[in-house]
Length: 308
Image 1 (cartoon, rainbow, N blue to C red):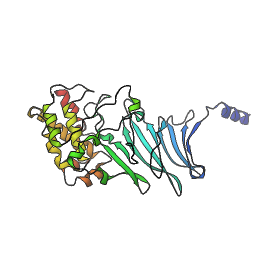
Image 2: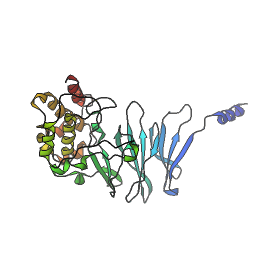
Image 3: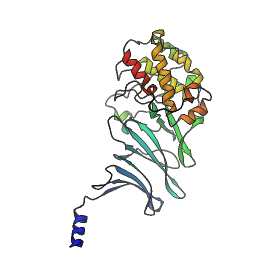
Image 4: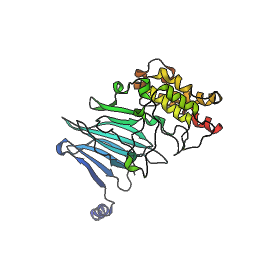
C-alpha cells in the first residue's frame, strides 16, 4: 500500500521544468530550472558539468541576452528579482579549458534588458551602466537612471571593469560616449536622447541657461543633468573637474547643489565600482565616503526637489 501511495504521489506531482539554454556537451550545460510545488518558488539558473551543479543563482526568471561579439565567447543571461520597478542582473559565462565557468554577475538595475545594448557597433567590450545611480531624482519608476556606461573585460576569467579604458579627458568624458546604450528596436519611436557636449565650458553654459524653476518626475531637469555630467567625469578619472560642472547650479539652488554632492558621494560609496573609482580618483572626498545604505544622503536629491 505504501508503495502504491508513493507511486501515485510521484505521478501526480507537478513536474519540474528544466529548460536547456546552452549545451556544450562535456564542457557544460546552462539550464533554467523552474521549481516544483513546495520548493523555492524562484527559478534557478544552473551550470552543470559532468552531471553536477557547479553554480546556480535564483531569480523570478531568466532570459538569454542577444549574442555577444568577442573571444572567448561570452554567454549572457538576465535575471529579474521581481518587485515594483526593479531589478535585473546580468549573469555571464565563458568557455575555458576546464569547461564552461561563471564569469560574474553585473547589476543592470531597473533598465529592462530588451531596451539596452551591451556592446557598441563593432566593439567586443561589454558596457553596463552602474545601477548604483538608478532612481536618481525620484524614488519611483519615473526616477532618472544616470549611471555612466562602464566597460567590462575578462580578467583571469572574471568580468571586471576596465579602468584603463574608463580614463578619458574631461571634454571626452562628457561627450556622446557617456550616453546610455539603448536598443532602438525596443522603442515605438525614438530612444531617449542624451545630450553630448563638445567641452566643459559648453556643458556649464547649457546648465546656466536651463530652466531650473520646476521639477516633474520623468522629465529632464538641469540638476539631474548636472549630476549625470559629474558622474561621467568621475567615472573617467576626472573628479577634479566636477566643481566646474557644479558651478552651473544657480545661486538660488545652493541647497540642491549640496544635496547633489552628498548623494554622489553616498551612491558611489555603495557602488560595486567604488574600488575602481578610488584608483581612478585618489584622495577625493566624493570618492572616499564609507558605504551607509540607510544614510538619508542616498535620496538627498529627491528630497531637495520635492521641497522646491
